[in-house]
Amino acid sequence: MEYKLLGVGIPSRYSGVPTHGKKYTGTGNSVVVEQEVTPVTLTDHLAKTQNPETQKWALALINALFLKADNKKRKKIAESIQSKSIRTIILNNVIRRTTISAAVEGRYPTAPQVDAEMSHQLYVLQTLLFNLLEERKNTKADSTDQMTLNCIKELRRLAFDVDGHGDSLGKRQNYVKDYKKLGFRNHANPVDDFTLVPPGVLALDNMVYFAKHHQEEYTKVVLENTTRADDHDLPVAEASIEMTKVLCDVLKVGEPPTEDGRVYYPMLFTHEKPFEELFCICLQLLNKTWKEMRAAAADFSKVLLVAQEQITRTMDKCSDNFDRFKNHLWSLSYQELNKIWLRDRKSKEELESQAKPIVELRERLKPEILDLIKQQRLNYLVEGSRFYSRPGRKGERVWFCCLSPNHKVFYYGECDEINKPTIEQLKNKLAVVDIKRLLTGKECPHVKEKRKHNTASLAFSIQTEAEIEKDPLNFIALDQEAFNMWTDGINALIGNPMTSQLAQQELEMLLSMEIKIRLLDTEGIPIPKTPPPIPEEPPNYDFSCNGV
Image (cartoon, rainbow, N blue to C red; front, side, top):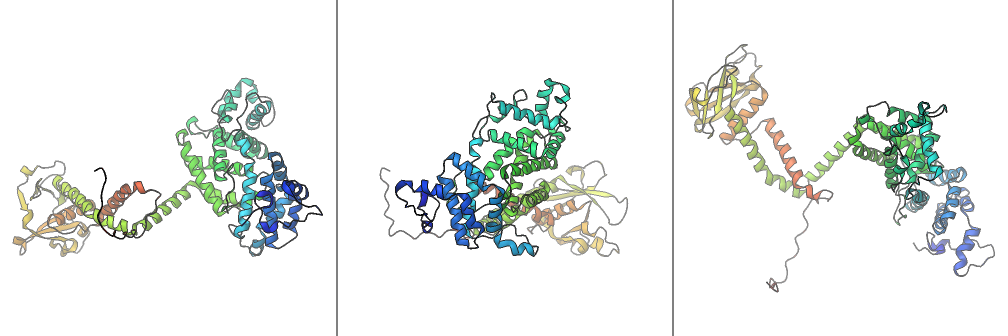
């Protein structure tokens, strides 16, 4: 779309703005337009017409006037736009116009449905309004400025001296102690905390707004963090500074609007001071998340990141008014966010696991992992285990069996329940090469004919060629782990696959870990489901390398 009038933001088709008899010539056009066309007059086109095209161009012209104006005029335009009358017109006639029927029926969409171009114009207007905060964001606090000093004193007074009976605890020297409770880094001179830009004095503006317009909530947050242990209290002032930076990043304060931007938040048009209101809600959220995470001072950065994630997720889903935003934000607790992260991670892993390169990598790694599990099983057998000799008898004698270090012979014999016998003390042995078959569960002859099979799930038998007509070597493991380890180990020795559920779980876990480690360098890079095509062969292979 071509933009000509005023040099920015206005479609060329809108160049037919009424001139009231004046002829626009040369570079004075913008001055005449600024005098004749103001945001207040343009809002009539938003209020008195239902034509989306007219509303779109009227909003585009407001944005153009905003962009063309100097900083002083921009502030005046912003004051007009943020007045209750104009905000109501923008909300009811532009943003909510397409969702009135849904609201009447009791359905509240998470985001109003407006066309792409109107969304862009609303996004531009929102961006321009918030960019007026850039000056304060990049302004350092001045320790000689009396207004700044008064603001900090007011923060202390509203937190600890709400009845107005003099200084905290009646002593002026307790200021430093109170500033420490408020969470300032520099207790003696809190102004220094606002010399870092960004967010500069913008953070102080937000704190003062919170303390004056939401005094009960402000006092509650401060007092909650003065009753905890020193290491577990949330430094409110430091949290306010960092939260201001977070909101500046989320709302992209100071960044010019882009040509393809479409994201705007209707709730920010519902209040005269939307940035400050959003700050108040989000600082209370940070305090709530701090308690949920049972955080200490060392966890501050982690809690801040969690809060930022809660804010961005909620703004994307529910941003039509501040009340609904706060309710949804409160419902997205740290525990709930953890569940969402877990689901997202599993979905991502499942999606990536279906990609052909991952499938091929998995197949290449599988023999190595199985060999690792096999070695672990054999080491377990070498250590040896105790077994019951017969099923279903309390106080039954135990016996001991182990595998030789060279994995060729099983040694077994009687033992007590305390001392572990050595191979030399075990009188019986069985060569691994003589094993023909492994029986498990109810297949085993020592539990097959028993009426009660309470121990059948832990029973297994080793059958040799010579014992086909005799009783095999029978085992009853003391627990499920020993049963799994021994049956897997014996199967591995005789060349059978390891079939226990434990082996499958370990295989999946180790494969998953190995694949994640190998894919660390590809973090953030989408993995295609199919490999890229192989390029065509060159016409010849007469390559030459100069200087080699």
